[in-house]
Length: 139
Image (cartoon, rainbow, N blue to C red):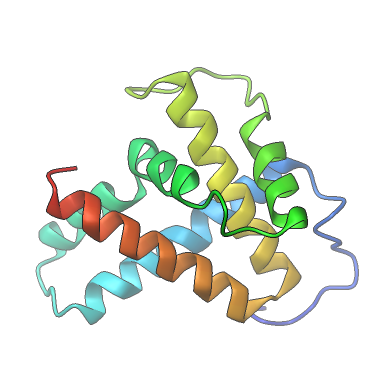
């Protein structure tokens, strides 16, 4: 399951919304693990903190911070996700924030399905750094 390469999945051929679907789950799990490793033991506090990290407005900030840190393929994947039309309106966030967050999730999903663990960890570390700065500044 995790880490195994399924010969039937080529991330370059998967739709951007499917990549974002996978990326959303991978990113949420990474954030939950990060928060538990921070020593937070209250499930309510874990949930509140996780929401702050994974909401669309925060992911949109990460998406914008990735500019200049991606290679051409990653830029294309993120752009493809940003331009995807999900078929429903975002709740509580602007359309721009929602599209940027989808671009970020698409990139995470792509790297996960590529099994490019080192690059995925680099992107997740950059995301945590950006978010820590934003949350510290009252995100």
